[in-house]
Image 1: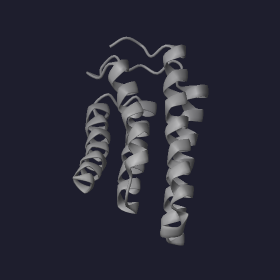
Image 2: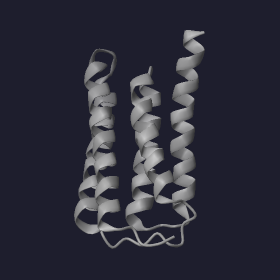
Image 3: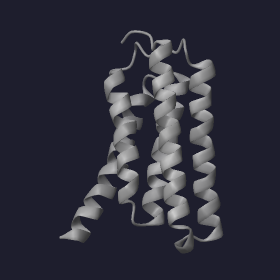
Image 4: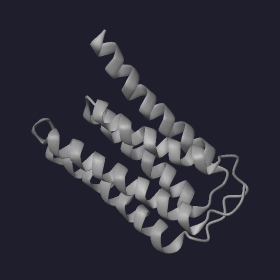
Length: 140
C-alpha cells in the first residue's frame, strides 16, 4: 500500500473527529441513564479520539501504511460505519465497546502498526455489527 497522503491523513482525522462528536452527542442524549463513572469513561474515549484526530492532522501526514493489507477506502469505510452505528447504541456497554474499538483502530493507524490495523478493523466492524444486530433484534 502506498503512503498515506496529506489529504488522506486529513480526511481520516476528520472522520475520527466526527466519530468523537457523534459519541459525545450519544453520551449527552443518554446522560440520564449513565452513571458518573460511565459518563467519565466515555468522555475519556471521546478525548482520546479527538487527540488522535489532532495527531493525524499534525503528525501523521507522512505515515506509511504500505505494509498493511487494508486500503484507505476500507479504513475510511470502517470509521464511517462506526459513526453511523452510534445512533443505534442502546446500552452503555455498546457505546464503550464501540469507543474502545475506535481507539484501538486509531492507535493502530497513527502508530503505523501495519500488523495491528487489520485486527483493529475487524474489532471495529464486530462492535458496529453487534450494535446493529442488537437494534435489529429489538425491532423484530
